[in-house]
Image 1: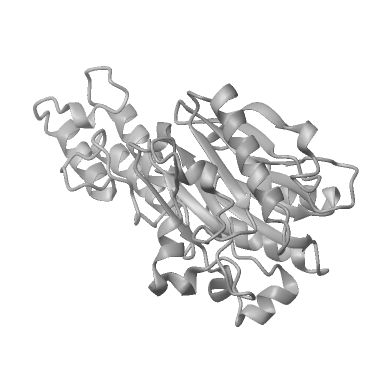
Image 2: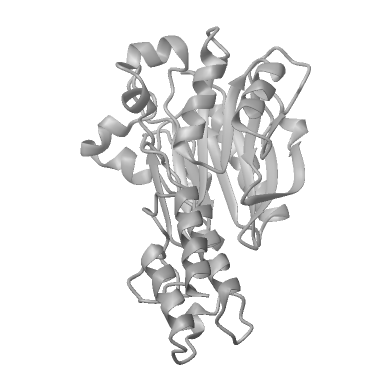
Length: 344
């Protein structure tokens, strides 16, 4: 019996020899060190062979018996734990969302392959994208990422820069296919209507609204009107939803003429998770639009998320994956992505 048990152990060790980065959990963590690894397997084998007192943390299938089935379950936990890429932004414990204006996508013949590589290394769940000009190229990215990824574009037949989503369905359930809203205000939104996605993560529902406000000086009134219409829509239709409004807002959070006043004037209802980047001069290296330079890509959350643990930051992909911002700009975009991690 002892020989058989150790043969099973050796077989699984050979199948996966990397036991680093194991997530903290109770079930299976027999020695209580916060990790599940080969040490716990050895302890479980000894519990079985020596007929030790019953240990609930070692009873992986909860049948009140410790036997070889628990060993197999424990080893399966170890070898199935994902190994995070070196440049990962997200993690298995959080809902990881990026907003990213990928300028004139695809702007280069290598953009699709490069974007697929970057996303696979960032380890995220959802990307809300702007300026996606080619539906087929977007589908190619999803295909390269794997069968668990799916892509949506607000107008599949358009050659203009449309709002889009890339979604990793391993952890995220799509409750409703994305749809556009506020059609009567196309002019104010520069014909880029807000794109809504309803999802569930870890049995918690979220509503994402992907936006791309009108750019440039002289369009402040249209951006302000867009904020007014979105505030009204959220209040009237999503008042109890966990809403994440994100995208290229094309304006500053701190400004004399502030197009975000409809949100900023209601601090009990809304909060820009990236506001600290705009107000802290030391965060200038994290501005999302270095070529201006300015910080104009934002993530707004509603009060249903306030008491949730979350963190937002600009992901400096130009420094992580490219030798310079110019190389990144030439191949990918003039915007950096801004991300939020949400725990629930």
